[in-house]
Length: 344
Image (cartoon, rainbow, N blue to C red):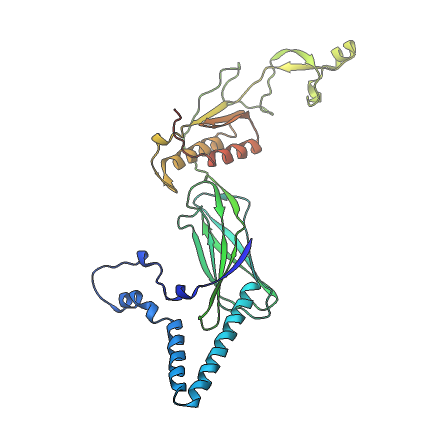
């Protein structure tokens, strides 16, 4: 939902961000100006000029002319800025997924459907996947009337893995003199999955599975293929044609396939303890993120040396399977894990 709001009159003279300022001992012009800056802003200057013109109008006719001219100019600036704000349509384009501790390129598009050129725009976006959670930048080039402009911003994903929220997206519009201010807000919420970063493991070995006569890493054309004959069974759609026993199939008048022993490389099971009492830290710098990074690193490192993989944790589990899609499914499931308290 898109909304356009005007800055209230009292907000022009209210100090903001006071809690972020460093009031260390000493006195200099920066501190003095910061603490009293609302007395030196443009709005106070405009009010002072209008009052001066009003007082002057009691004595000279030129004062009344200046007062009326100033009021007309202010009304013109106000309605021009409001028309520009109602003609702005912001949007963003996100990638399909991101990796932790890496930056992504976000494309912002600003459409100007008004009849005026826009040269004073400030964009503010919110992303829970970065530590600051606020993306703030200004549009340097003017956006001409009835056109659009695209800009790219690099955003670090250092707020931890998982599904993170984008929005709301807002644009602040001011007139050329910075007197009036309008905010255009796009409340549409977007979500971006942040996956773990892949870490390289050195000299990491896992135990061999014992459910086959040939255990460990084996050289074979196809994973699971063995020359040890086990028996026969009826043909099932999906079986390899090479395994059909043509002599017995002709004798029994139905397809029969040979069954061989399942020679596995290794079946890998990864368990992650996500109990809240066993972890410590804050978003982006904690022990559970390290556990998830290690789990994904193990799965990815041993992907080529294992036949099937699975993982389990509190409230989540992916059964044994193989393939790149299965690896991506486990990676996404691990990235969404959060510490859980033990139930009574």
